[in-house]
Image (cartoon, rainbow, N blue to C red):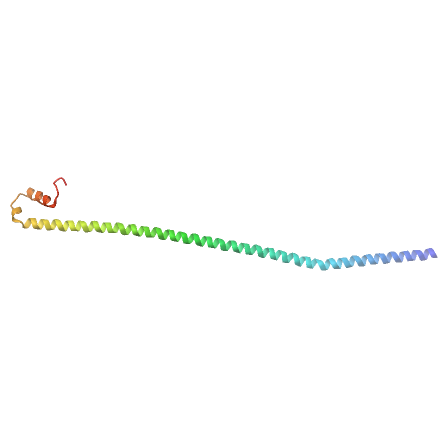
Length: 147
């Protein structure tokens, strides 16, 4: 009977020990279960933070590239403007030269007409030969026949 009682006590102790183990496992499981959302939330927050930092860095890179492209565009425009200005100055210079040349030609033609008119009105020259008249007109202009 004592052995039966001892065995009964032993069984009860063993059951109690198994129940305590099961309760301890259950508590650990609950604790772990509570920690998992916290860890999950922390991981999500870290991931979001890293993602935001990456997005900020990408945004800064995009802004920097936009500024660089804007500076390049401005330089191209300035370069084109300078080229256009130089070209306009060259065109104005050549136009002025052409106008001066045309003006000089017109003046020369007017001068020749005037001389021809004066020579044709001069009675001394009318009596000379045509060849002499041409020579005289060239001489009065300071030109030689070779010119």
